Length: 312
Length: 199
Image (cartoon, rainbow over all chains, first blue to last red; front, top):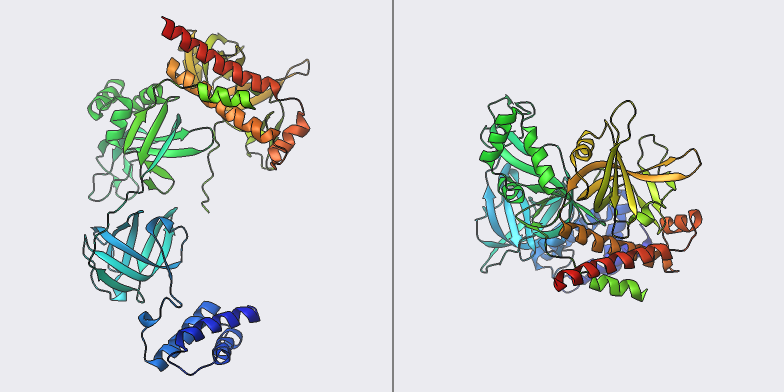
């Protein structure tokens, strides 16, 4: 922490209160310095504490400050780091069942740029969000789990319902390339039938529920590679059927005839590996979930590349 | 940052360049660290994706089956691929396939030194599959584009890239043969097209 930094923070805070309070930049700086140097408080926390002190003295609410000390207003797509305090304006797209008593509400928020999961803690005692409504949410904190970002509403969050609607954008991306691999765990698989458990069984066992009578499903975990980047893609039953022309029923018959489920994945590999595809869908962690799949079969056009080659 | 090891991209390269990629290296001392071949145009490759015409398969094994496949690109240059007991799927494909046929191969570049001291470069396949001509043509255009991009980066004096530097040091030759491979491959597609529309 340098002198200049403290001075800058002090000047910022001073600006916010100069109309209401008779204070000097030096007063503010002195308070900050005490917290930072004597009490070893991080500067952000010191700033927060000093601001609160002046808010009390002036009889003001934090909301009265014009953006001062506030967070960055972010769009959903811009959320790209954990533990950032931000403000967002978003629509409640979906509410899910909370799986723990500690969680009051959990679901999906969306704005024009995409969607993001949110969690609201029970102990933060906030008003209930309603599906389909748009809110201005201030002071939410971002989080990350396995490459996927979420926001958490907490005790300090303010929620304001807005009388407007938002056209929620999908965060689907389009990837193209050759299918260079179909990974293990693809083909005809069995899932745990327990409610809300869809885990893939390993040798008839669910890692949560032990030995169960599994339910058949089709899935492909594949890799698209365009020579510059690789994208791991998950094809669900419908997408797998479209990709391979093998239906779940046919796959079951194939496995029954062979007394082995692995023949299904083998057949799928034979039909799809080395072909070029375009896949569109949302991302989940490092995966793209294939909503639309197109085999790129139109003739390639060498003309443009040839012109480029001859120009070098 | 994610701690998941990132999968190696499959490079697109014509056989003329691939067979010249005789210099190999590792990025760390770890025994299991990936081995890269250095492409003469200045990129490392731990995996390649090639599509071409399978012209010949032969079991060259002595004690156990060891299949050799020759895959030819539009320039008539040959990729060699070898599959044995540790690549059972690829080996059985080579056993079954009847040349000529268009095939796509994903695999790892491998080098070995002959008794005469020459270094041969081949592909150890992860998968071999049958494809049609449209896929082959698409690969040719793609391989041409990627190769041109590498040539451009290499030729640009301002490029600062450790693999370009390494290629200048290890090979140091002209890239003209690879540029010609690009042009000839593309021209052969155009000729095919002209022929098709004349029919």
